[in-house]
Image (cartoon, rainbow, N blue to C red; front, side, top):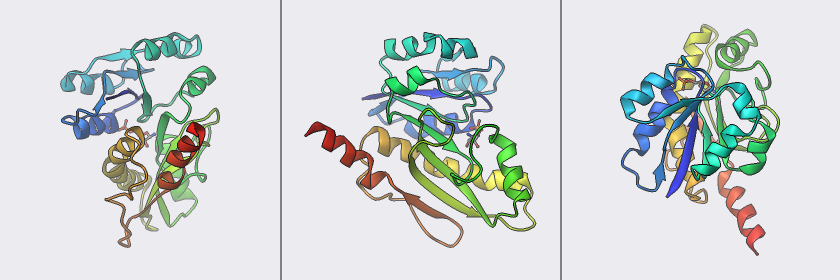
Amino acid sequence: MKNIALLASGSGSNAENIIRYFRKDTRVHFPFIISNKPGAYVHERAKKLNIPSFFYKKECFENGEVLTFLLENKIDFIVLAGFLLKIPLDIVRAYPDKIINIHPALLPKFGGKGMYGAHVHEAVVAGKETESGVTIHYVNENYDEGRIIFQAKCKVLPTDTPEEVAAKVHELEYRYFPEVIGRVCLDIGKIPFRSARNDGDITATTSAPNTAPDKASKKNR
Ligand code: GRF
């Protein structure tokens, strides 16, 4: 069984969707949610879901307290579901290719410091982009630069507002994030994505089948 820590800074709708998706799956366990915001709505969701949620301020991420907590609780993977703090180097190093983030745009475009939440969708609309989407990637020491695991696209119409783009992107997040988490954490990335499709509205691609498992097996030789 894999122990997965969920980290979220805001509403936590992705965190809730992930927990519900895996509710009856005994292969993965989400023992708690961590947030860097004491008043974030994700704490309410956690309460309703009967999952403990903890608030850790920024300094606790930086002084090793959070890393100690993760290690003590035998956490195997960390999933960032709308988590806005930069993950410090000691955590990145302790969890190589074990921290997964979702970004609400098609990286490498619209990524980096300050590109989060509504800012991303506003920039997409201001840039007159014809498509946007989600990027699920590993976390390294730089914002939004870790290896891409999966992307799914949606169309952006000239009339779309940032809120409308956000709604389309959220739909992709709910549809794909849990499945990708399952594939990465359970190491079944070699099997093609069952739900990946290309139907004109949504294009889903993944690099996971050829990368993570091969790299791992080479290391073991
Ligand atoms: C999502 O759009 C996610 O991609 C981004 O932050 C947002 C979090 O939304 N990183 P929610 O808190 O899960 O509702």
